[in-house]
Figure (cartoon, rainbow, N blue to C red):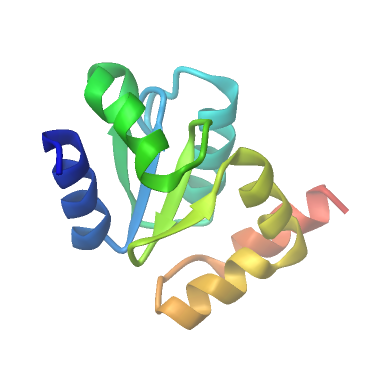
Length: 120
C-alpha cells in the first residue's frame, strides 16, 4: 500500500465525514468543491477537509482509492458517497439527510429543508 493510500484510509476511518476537495472548506478553489463544502457548511455538518491541490499523491491517490475520476469526493463513516452531482441530488431528494440520520451524523434539519425549498 502506498503512503498516499495509507494516509487516505487513515483519514476516512478517523473522521465521520471527509471531503476530498480542491481547496479547503473555508476557501474552496473550484466550483464543484465549493458547492459540496457549501452544502455541508450550511447544514452544520462537522467534516474534515483534505485539499488535494496540496499533495499530488493524494490528488491521484483518492481517485484510485475510490475508483472515481473526479474531485470532490465525500466519505461518510469510511464509505465513498459520491461527487458533486450525486451529493447535490441526494441533498435535494433528502437521501443525504437519511444517510446522516442512519449513520448518526449530526446536521441542521431546518437548513437541509431550506436547501430543498430553494431548489424546489
